Length: 196
Image (cartoon, rainbow, N blue to C red; front, side, top):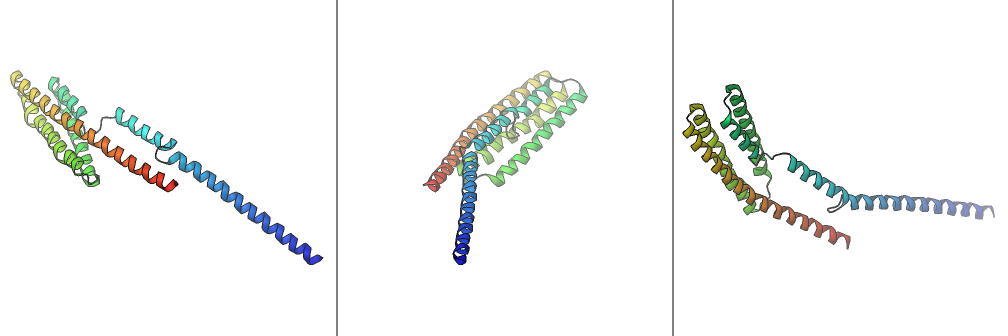
């Protein structure tokens, strides 16, 4: 009889241990499912991250797009104070350094998509470099000369260089959107396959 009580006590202990382990595993599974649902592509946190990236991109001018450099160049054309002009040229140079840093980053990190790489690394780069060259080789000397007709010609050249750059940027944005959608679709396909 004493032996039977001991066996029953062991059975109860094993049963309680099994139920406890099972309950912990179920809680872990539920937490894991909730975490996965929130962080998966299309999940709440993932969408919030994407939204924050979009907001930042809309607020801050990206270094690969010369809109801020263009604004500084136009301000430089209209400035007459020598100290302010020097600061504007320094600001312009700083933006060029940022552009070149991002260019090198994307050169090393772009996917092997030939069309996207070509647009950014060749077409986009050449239009941007042309824009910078027009500023340094035409705008700055024209403004320093004080010759209004020379300044007008340099400004027109800057506007054309910017428009060419803007055309390249628009094409790159289109390809970038296609690339992002392709990555999103592939990831969604992988996650749907792993759920089955």
